[in-house]
Image 1 (cartoon, rainbow, N blue to C red):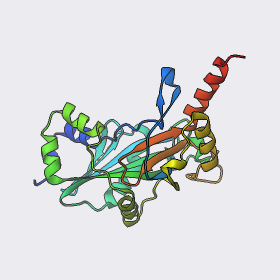
Image 2 (cartoon, helix red, strand yellow):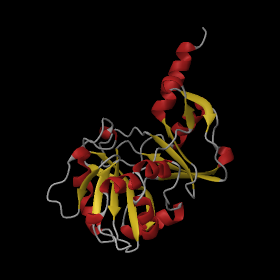
Image 3 (tube, rainbow, N blue to C red):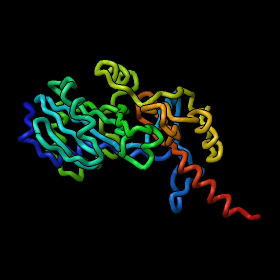
Length: 262
């Protein structure tokens, strides 16, 4: 198709390009506590730092235009004099969107964590001077013909396609290549391990997090607090992905300690 953003259903495009939910490494149980059921990985597993910021999108379109979005909504389009200031995403990413090279036959969606400044309550862990930064963590490439078919579907079908792994994410080598090509910093890569080396128990996973990420590798200045949020685990092809946050494991083990017989 000859893409024209002004002729496109923006609600459908928004749904098409939202970032899907990522499950926790250990399944959630009652009141947000973790169970002992761990995500099944096979083969090499890549660990990356999970940054506590806000999920943002740069949607690069085949007609040379772009859109900026938060996790849930579109915030700004190329040529807008004023964008939605929510969470500082437009201010942080407008310059990046202007310099990205569009693909003439595909929709490219760059997923970034915008963090620091006053973005979240954890911003002080990354900056003491209210610096704002961003890190790339995923890219989706949707060819024109596939996008045309999907955008014609009801939003419920688009959402189901997205949440059931339909989005064609770049595999790790291609993601790294694209980040280098566009001059983007990736979320820090921490390790590559065989799946058999991952801990399966909740308490051992907390110890694993502390060993592998004792402090953030995404600090924006020397006065950052340094406390990390957690680790994202993913296969190189991204077919399996899960998140492990310090907070979830600490909360679960505190509750277990309170409820254990004395």
